[in-house]
Amino acid sequence: MIKQLSQRLLGPVTLILLALTLWLGLWVTPSFKVQGNLARLVYVHPAVAWVAIYVSFGTATIASALYLWRRTRSMLVDRIAHCAMEVSVVFIILTLITGSIWGRPAWGVWWAWDARLTSTAVLGVFALAYLALRRANDDPELRARRSAVLALLAAVNVPIIQFSVQWWKTLHQGATVFSTDHGLKIHGLQAWTLLISFLGFTMLYFWLLRARYRLEVLRDERYRASLEEALVQRRREGVR
Amino acid sequence: MIRVALLVAAKDLRIERRSRVLLWQVLPFGVMALVLCGLALGPQHAGHSSAGPGLFYLVMLLVALLMINRSQSIENSPGTKASVATLGLDPAGVFLGKALALMVELWLMGVVLLAGSVLLLHTALGGTLSALPSVLVTLAALAAAGALYGALSGGGQGPATLLPVLSFPAFAPLLIAGERSFSAALHGGSLWQWWLISLVALAAYVGLGILLYGVLEES
Image: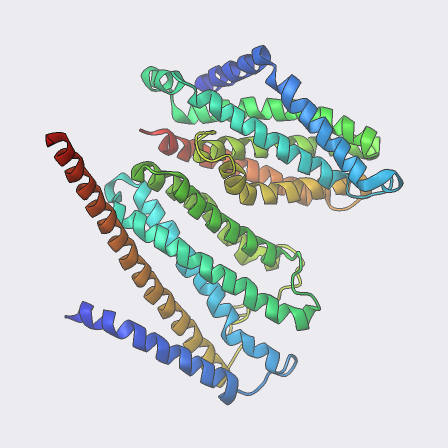
């Protein structure tokens, strides 16, 4: 009952939160001191990056680790890893696009070979490579095992992205929300709008993941049904 | 594990010595690529360009991809997998052996291509020699990563583009670190910072390979 209700509410709540982010971010919150209205991208870009790098890629990594651990090995976790990685690709592309839109007026270029930008792009290529690897293997077991290993290898890049702004002198700004002593760098209505945007995009991720997962299950069922149908047909031909 | 690694490495190097693929196919390809890089720069710029280290690593990347594919096709040749399974060889040792053999091959290619870059791209001899330790560490990291990604791509059994697609994101940081340390040796700058990144990457890939190679090879 609760599960059904939460599944039904996921979509509408996501839409409400995103609409609220849009309204608060564009009309209600004041513009920023230095960058003016341009900095309103703070209500989109960090939240999208959070979902792309930590939530989505994190889900794929955890599901892959669970697949590699014999006790929890199942096609269910492999399917979750695959779906999460697909959604991650979408969010990584969105992260790069929104970052680029912000970077053009702020830095004067659409793209800079900055440590954070480059490491995020590398993560995107890793995610695309993961999808390519899945397409290259027909055997479900082999495919699941190889892609799980690749997801774990790719996860090494996540701490590099996180600490890139500290390890190298970069164009990209440091932490947006928290300062180095873990104090808040953003306050009041702006902080609340940021929080709502993080919640909204995280829920959007779960909504997309759920939809993608259902699609994958349906595809598997269809494949199995078509396989059985083909077997029945061959048997009939054999009887004739 | 070390004994198995040495056995596998000796086997791979012996095959390479007998087949001479490295000498007659990969090396000419690498030199040809280096000549093309020199031609792309043109006679006016070849001696003055700071692109030498980048072009050297670009050529090394192409050569490494060929060698990784070859190394894995040796492992996937008929009978080899069955023999490894029958003998009950430690997969971590097999990984280390393959990485070791690849490293030796890459080092040989690296030294020849470094000499080529001095001749064709006019990188300074003194700077190139001082870059040698960092080049060797970067190539060792490339070999460890290559052995792992080669197994991941299925060693020539999958599509030809799979290995480059899979390994590019893993190789990119290594190549950047290698290029930066080579440039620092030639033109001055912080050599140790990039050298350290290559060393950390080498340790990480050796560790990950020891842990994960068995999973890739399990049937």
